[in-house]
Image 1 (cartoon, rainbow, N blue to C red):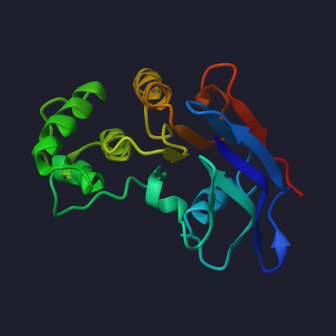
Image 2 (tube, rainbow, N blue to C red):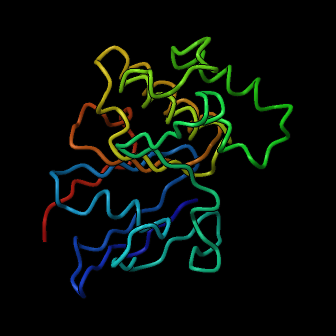
Length: 208
């Protein structure tokens, strides 16, 4: 299970939101929904120790192991942030394969092509990512996050650049892999329609 025990983030000795406690079962997705400036994205960055001047408060436990500075959550997590953060000197396929460094190289091409097919980008493995549309670039970022079958997916507005039809398809792929892998997802969004199906964990983020 993934447990958040009185988790918040602190900046300049002030909490950004009331501490949160939640226990997630494998295959579940926790959604943080609220307006901008409530600390949702900051929390995702703090969970993987990528937010300067911010302190993660509380305890995070993954599959019975406490995550701290010696056992970093970033080692078993993949992220999709609002900026796709692709590398211009690498092809689409090479960008995706970056997350598969622990897998044999013989598996890279098969996995990359399978994900491109799933996400409606079939045949684009050799393309220059910066010749793609913004929505296509976001789907490449999603593919990179999914490629190594991570234990945890951290998702910050991953659907914001997608049209309605593509958004629904990408949601199906993302949420489907989390279910099939029995992994965990933490989703940040402003929009109720981005949330996974009923029965998942939802945290509506008020300000302090």
